[in-house]
Image (cartoon, rainbow, N blue to C red; front, side, top):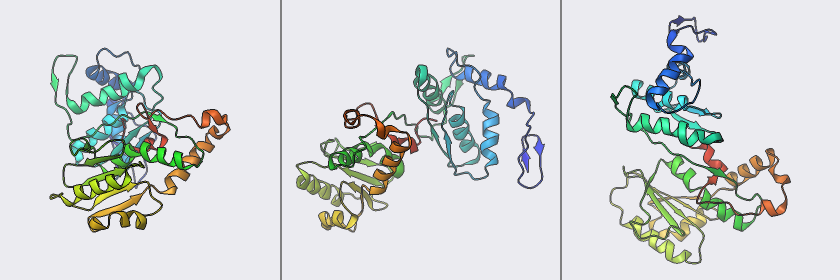
Length: 296
């Protein structure tokens, strides 16, 4: 196999890669081209990260960088996809220390996707066939109560958008109350409906049924997510369109995974008052959104 200028036998990956394109100064030079005003130091070389990703073999890997900085991993992912037609997805996680995510990680890749004018005044074409999403994370209280389950349903909406690849919101266009229900599509015939618990549940369900009945460009069943004990109960509430929807109640598995994460981080030892404090859903989504293709 060949990795840069290194040729190996079988699937072995060389331990020393000596190409000049892999030197740190190459990463710094490219980064300055994208964000000239930034003072970020020692970004990784794009060519090196591309070569590492390419060594993984598959063109549809999910790539996680849990300590993101300059955003090179995501830049390399979308650049490699553009070169070989791959469908790799990349997740970046950072604590946003000194606004690094907002001003460096996210900003760099937004420019790479949208296009930018480099330090020499030359317009660089964007890699526009990409989605970039930036999420902030927070906690839903860990106590297993009905109220917290409802909060988790609401806070998981962005995660569901990522899972179903449906980002185009149609909620207000179809006159739904976003506190009761939200609609999304991928603009290619796939739709997702997320229904929240409310006192107007029956009216909301009827509105959703009418929406589904009037769809004419469906390429697959509508994904119907709702706060419900199981899929059969949920389908019974939408029996008029049950052949057109795939009912997916918020599963206990998600809630249990959340609780496991909460405990493993020692957060269950916090005072009850802190544990029961509401999360800020305007600024944050829950911890599960770290599974998303957010920024790098």
